[in-house]
Image 1: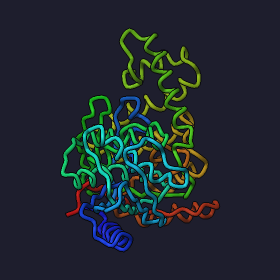
Image 2: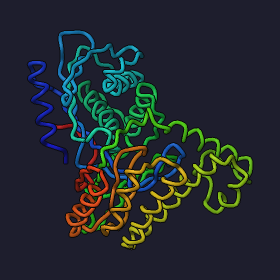
Image 3: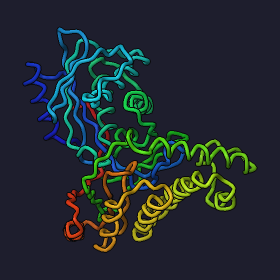
Image 4: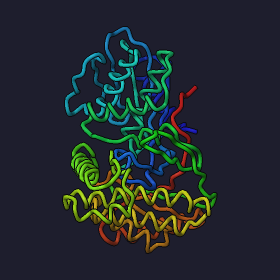
Length: 388
């Protein structure tokens, strides 16, 4: 399943811009993070799902060398040499995600030159729904189709991650790319970022997610994201010296071990680790809760997650806190910020029959407090695909 409207529009823009229809078209969805905030780069586990919004990427051959790239929603066109490592200037920052993917595909013997490209997405920019990973994955799938080459899904995810690190300046984990690639219809993806194994977990038929976007500017590369990662690495290093077993990452520390030793850690590192180790613990608790259909308890874990985001990791903000509390008051089973934080959106778990009423209550209450949020029902969706 993919967003047919976005695909049709992307193909039309490409055809109008370059005078020919694309020969390779790929689509990749965005994601919501349901539980497991900032656990991916700590080798932990995460629950996420691909969503019914994403990016389409189109390619056709060109007589001109290099890559011409059109962002269909701006609209703007730029060009670059896919063989160089230089980032594009800031006004074309959006093209760096694409250039990074093409650059690192070259390490696998997959090269493109003399091509025209167009991308278009339905993911609201800055909403914390991982539009960048969707663009990276769609780019990789389209290039692989265009060149007739194959690459494993994990390698595709790693290429997207490396593009994010080296071309966009954000030291992200693999959560976003995994979610975009491994998504399933009406189910969650449990990802283990140590073993890089994933498995699907079915959601009860009578629940959906709401995505409430208070429209706060959101750019992880300009946020304290990288500083949080450094704090987590420091906590792991200090715990490695304190515990009687190796600690490679915070994944290796149980909640009880952390509580016993947190007063011996650097205070800021301990504060950040409180959230991450708590999140890894909550993800594993939620697997059993979903098996037993204990939705109220599962939803409470989402509220607990947001609370440590707010107090320990400090990656929330007043607007997101307001939305979460308003969701609780409106009757949501659970709610939390979704994604890196410092902006973005709130995801709320609700019974499908209550979704419209709860959504209206949240919007009305937020507006009374001076916010202008928008909300959509999120349909957990299938992962990236080539559009035939």
